[in-house]
Image 1 (cartoon, one colour):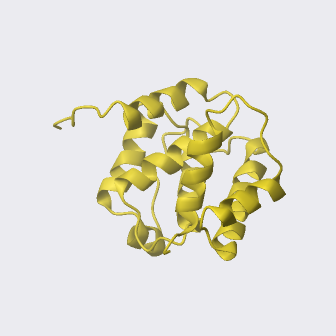
Image 2 (cartoon, helix red, strand yellow):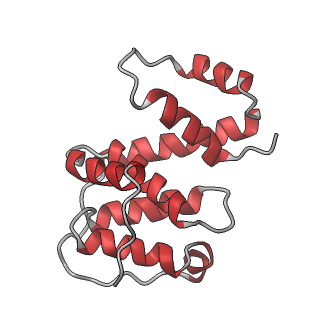
Length: 157
């Protein structure tokens, strides 16, 4: 089975994010993921990814917050995030859905995935995961959730 870190993250997100039941401990989750067919290395990488996301919860907004600065992408980021992905992040920021600090966290978490290239769906899912993890982002999370699950009509610019 060719599974990657994002597949493990999606499994966890889909099976535990909306569940009102008490969350199992990490060891139980690892066992469940292994039994579901995920490889131990991918499971470990997914938990490392989630640990890094959890550590970001307490980071203050940087000096960019509200500055109107333009984000310049590195060559590595451009190689992974095509124009559509970068444009989507810019749209979210300009629409006030994400702040510059959230944008940076989304880019960081995208770059941390094993994917060679990110597509728009991957960017949307990672954005949803980041917003879910950030305190005070309930409205932005709900907006992204609607965008993902309501199959909106594509806007013409």
